[in-house]
Image 1 (cartoon, rainbow, N blue to C red):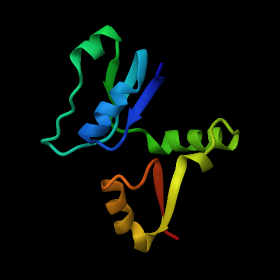
Image 2 (image 1 turned 45 degrees about the vertical axis):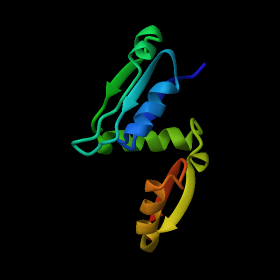
Image 3 (image 1 turned 180 degrees about the horizontal axis):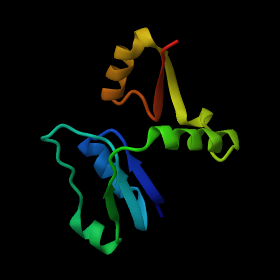
Image 4 (image 1 turned 60 degrees about the vertical axis):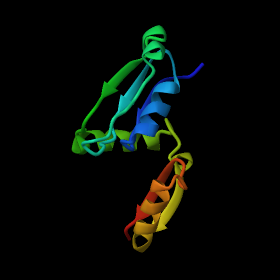
Length: 115
């Protein structure tokens, strides 16, 4: 049970742990979220070794090259963007949305609409 690949994008120790626990045997946990310099992610060593979990750090992307490809995939219906956004808010509400995110009130993705 578990997923092949899980991505942690918040840079929080709690979501680091959740990410590593959600992986199937031999799966990959990819960490892209940046944390404070003092943040430490913990994992049960036996869980990591026995289940052959791979933890990978990944920093950055080539937005000018990668984003058009992602848009094309979405246009072809490879993934459904509507189901990935759990909340939308106006730019003026961004601070409130960040507070909600920090307090675990937003599950999934929130989009701040600038225009």
